[in-house]
Image (cartoon, rainbow, N blue to C red; front, side, top):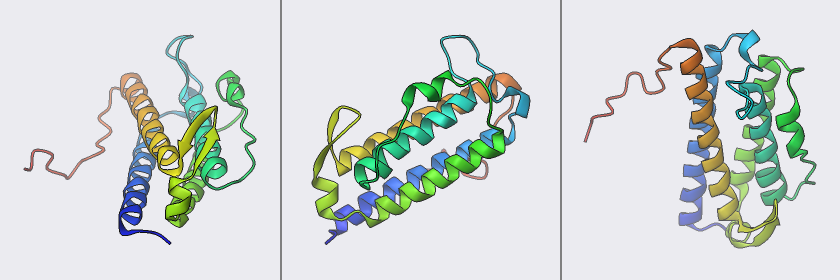
Length: 167
């Protein structure tokens, strides 16, 4: 059984996941293929690494933690790789990962949202898992946008057509 509050929470989480996906797509449109694995410095990650990292994190937390699938994540590999995937391959991976995660969130009932389980060493309820993923996805979407805006000197227009000064 799913309460109206849980239904609304999941709907808002899915909305935020889809917003980050929309923003990542827009940012990637401005990224030349040859810049996909470029790092601003050795302490930072490339857009390619961040996309792999997002896929790994979403799979570990939502697919495995919330959805009960096996946890096969190799987190260190997400940051170690320096090439090998194209922009379109990474985009397809992210899009599919997010689509499946949103479906798992949509299916979550009150029991699954309240049950505590261990994910990446943390004890989290289903709600905690979803909050983590939404926040984490948004955080790295901002990093991707910042890097691409710095690299290309372009306004990504995430909210073009919206009056963000409306009260």
